[in-house]
Amino acid sequence: MALLHHYVYSLSLSLSLPRAAVSARAFTFTFSSRSIVSAASATTTSSPPAAVSSPARKTPLADSRVLLGMSEQELQQLAIDFGQQSYRGKQLHHLLYKRKVKEIEEFTHLPQVFRNELQEAGWKVGRSPVHQKVTATDGTIKLLLKLEDNRLVETVGIPVDDGKGSVRLTACVSSQVGCPLRCTFCATGKGGFYRNLQSHEIVEQVLAIEDLFKLRVTNVVFMGMGEPMLNLKAVIDAHRCLNKDIEIGQRMMTISTVGVPNTLKRLASYKLQSTLAVSLHAPNQKLREKIVPSAKAYPLEALLKDCRDYFVETSRRVSFEYTLLAGVNDSVDHAIELAELLQKWGRGHHVNLIPFNPIEGSEYQRPYRKAMRAFAATLEARKVTTSIRQTRGLDASAACGQLRNEFQKMPLATDTEIQIEQPEAVALAC
Image: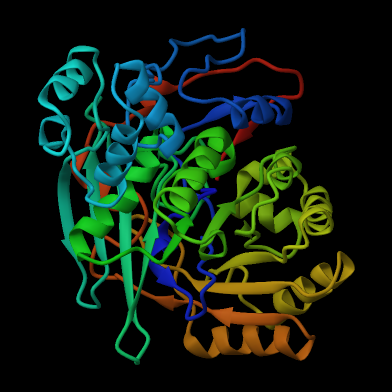
């Protein structure tokens, strides 16, 4: 992503912090739009569709004996199943989400016999160690968490002082280890794609940010590594936990996507109050395919129709992300075309402009401020609400995936490349 990528460090001055685009991916998945749909509903226990011509990726089965992510009611039932009174489940809930205890042996409020039985039965908290931390001069911090299978995943904490003595702390979380899409301006895909994250591996990113800053996370954006719509079940489960158990308001969360066929309707069915951010990056299909190759499987007209249907179903305005690339998509003519496109499909849109965050080896350049201001002014003159995201963390391996690539040198594509043979196959890249 859904999924971010270099601009995860770009920060909107508004409460809406959509991820500017899905993560870039240097790894090629070949499949049709129908196979995208099946991937979107798959969890880490899923297998690729039948016709697989290369070795299946080494994805661990989802571990059901993880406490993190469980609701208070589920924890109460777990306590009862172990012969304990239900209030022990409430204590577990407090230890997990308020005190953020990382190991069962540290649950000193619980009887030793209960702790021993949990461990003997194979239960664990589900927290991962911090492998690396990088701090930018503006206070933005990027973390690499080392997962149980030794894969690395990024998460970012973005603090903003409101000038009134309080700090808004945004956690930018990843939904996949790498990303199977290959947006041409994004760094994540250069490290390849390995697997979907389990729901607790998404939740723990928020807790890691809270541990680091010693503050409550106020906002969560699903804009880190990966495309959220390709791991929707885990994203929805994590969203529930963040809202109900960690008590972050739904309207303080944003789910971003570059667009995966047939997933917006499914997302709408959950009736979330969170913001949907759709990464466009181009005002027409031809240019969008060059920047976001996965657009070949999901034409712009179809995507915008689904966005309109999403608004009708949820009454929630869709935010559009647009990464400005110098000399590619940042002219006034592009802005005029974008305004006309959005007006064709409805009113009340918001466009979040993201100046390109340079990454090593990229041919793209960051536009001049004059060009950015002219682009924004052109949209505003045509009654399209627009904001330019404030860039954060430029000195902290800011592009999504860059820090991970530095520490996990072995490309993942060698052990994860899958050819899914479907009619009318297209090469997905983003």
